[in-house]
Length: 567
Image 1 (tube, one colour):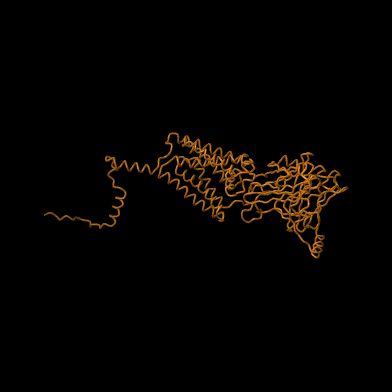
Image 2 (tube, rainbow, N blue to C red):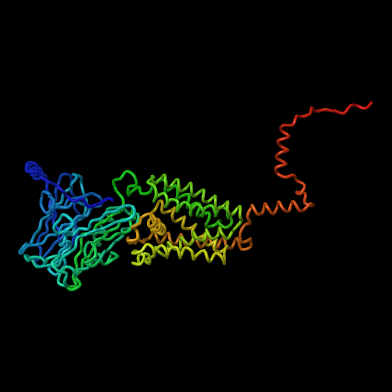
């Protein structure tokens, strides 16, 4: 699990401290003046520190938070010119909270680059009064005494955010209320925490998009207008929330702490993630998606397009594609949970086994001719997709599904098994409907291999739930933006056109093509009993083959007349 928050842990020995102080004084120090609520572009050059100054602070302001956000470079935000442990924070999204003393009208903090690289970002200061809650004032977990930051960590499956509890506000110079002496209504235990998320534009990894989104959600009013509240935690709940990871999709997470008695609120420092790395040489955010995945889903999309429009006409090809999808999906789940093989190897092996599954389904129909059994398997494919769609909606985030895997999987299986029941009454129409809907969705998955679309998470969320035992506790929200509505339209148009075209073309044909093996058996019996049929007198295949072998081994007679002439 990668963690974007890296705490500064530096122990300075006296000689080193003197040398470093001399070096810092030799640097060219810039100064940036902040106005409350106004964003400021900040450039931190190599080997340079920036002094952030907030002046003309009104007397009614009690606390001020300074935020600094960069896209993927860490920056150090410190109370002192020389960063020290407990007085500084190093992260891509860093913030410090300062409690003002009586008569204080200005404030200075310091920004620097921990790695000596140039850092470009935006900063903003927010001010709060004595009645507003103080974010992170009851911190017992992180290094800062008062920590208004949100700490984020992600992996392939989940993104986790954590933050420190808040406390009630107080006047300048007064001692803040105790955090844990009592749990009455006049203590911090009455506070509530609203968890918000804000999705960045899809397929947009630019700094401009990120910084403009931060400007929209930095304060309480902007966050409530532009963000989406996903949960509300009480003070008795654990200050942690787990979300579904969406690699390549920018998401900003933030927390608003509310005082329901005084009807006041304050915002924590927002944090962002793309659930991928900008510096990785393999599967970086800019080149997300393996070549093997693109090849696999490109072939799948082409096959899905053919099934969408011609699946019922070429029944054997449809059976192969459905059997391939069904077997390869569940075999991929099996080897992922039981082995530590590389992703490319797992995908290749799953494809090979999927081919075997497709051939097996075709051969079962060829040998036994049971159309209904094959249609039930096809119906399960449509049922799987329908169940995934139902639980992809906000219904999937209900507490009853998030708190119990049993309830989730029982509901999923019930929906999946109900759909094939309609195929018993209308087998041909059900088969053509499956071809149109599932085939069109395969095209959507092929597009997702090159351009991100949230529709891929209809089935990807189910796959993640199969592979990760703790996935049920996550919120599975995904953004729905312009590209998603376009892909929904493409899916609908392809599906409807494929269904209508196949129903029209097959209206005068038999419901299903006959089994080749059964046809061969019937033809063989007909030849045996019908002596008037010329084919009745044709030798059997084994006799014809034996005769061919004999002709190769028989000695050829010389050409010419062999009968003696009659005198």
